[in-house]
Length: 376
Ligand SMILES: Cc1cc2nc3c(=O)[nH]c(=O)nc-3n(C[C@H](O)[C@H](O)[C@H](O)COP(=O)(O)OP(=O)(O)OC[C@H]3O[C@@H](n4cnc5c(N)ncnc54)[C@H](O)[C@@H]3O)c2cc1C
Image 1 (cartoon, protein in one colour):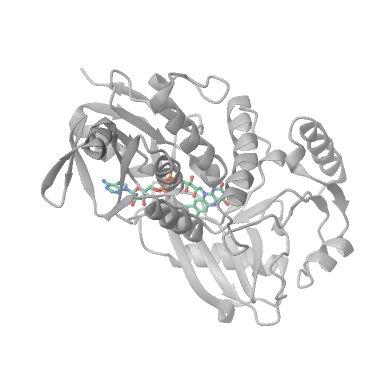
Image 2: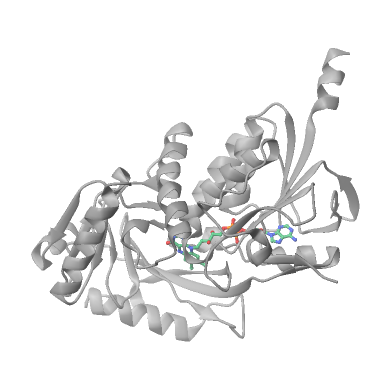
């Protein structure tokens, strides 16, 4: 009897989308005994699993202060979450990042920016100007002559391992995971495998899929899709050292040795692609030629895999999250763009807090009505 009374008080939550936002929200809700949570994921076009996984927002040139606050606090939160859930190095690792500049005046400017940001973001860690020789000692196969700034707090995530880890922990706490593409029939009803299910709250964490999900409810969502492709190379001679830093060379693709001879090169940024899912020859050419400019010994023979994902982005390249305008049941998050692994876990945490306490988080974002409105 007591048990059924308790269950009646529990709120049913549906999360649509098991990328980094949905998986983190699902894990966090699974720890709260006030909620019974179901996570639906179609597994199609997920950005999280395709992503390079670089967490290093402090040296970005972006001027949007709300985005920077979200990314800086997001990077700090990921570290907390990784410790809380005991993530292993193949899921989250503080490897350090090196950002290069060709002109020494630009390098001075970057170093000043890093030092300024460290005042409010101690997570950036040690800041060090590195010469070509020092870069080559950290990344022995780099043949290009590069100079940069090393920050020890930079990290990398394996998106696939990250979401799988959180979903697995969530399932241990009672999370229900359903692998299916779903539709929203009204604010509280989800159509899944031809059956209707009712929920108290629905969290739409569907990345680029948000438009399609909300269109039947008469919402217009101003998000666009951008295709991102990257390649994985196997370089037997490459260091087995899993802790090698991520290299972000100016004007080139990011260069990420992740241990065991695996090297990730990425990513492309393609607006309005003709084909949203296929890996293309032009991407291979763009990525490989960039990689070869960094390590002249690489070739197509090293290629072992590719990844393709769709980023959702907004007109001002800023993410949005919160209650859908005019709704008490649906919350949304999208538009995380090319830094969503950095901001996604914090966005999920803030969404979960919004279920219990109203807030807008204006330090992190503009009004949601800038991105979504009800038609007619
Ligand atoms: C190639 C590439 C490289 C990137 N590199 C980085 C990086 O280095 N650092 C960084 O911070 N960010 C990076 N990003 C950006 C980051 O990956 C994304 O911003 C972030 O993963 C978005 O997370 P999300 O949870 O919002 O969406 P997603 O990861 O796209 O997840 C949305 C999920 O919703 C599901 N879904 C959609 N519609 C439905 C439906 N109707 N029913 C059921 N499920 C549905 C999809 O299948 C998908 O699994 C990169 C992205 C790409 C593509």
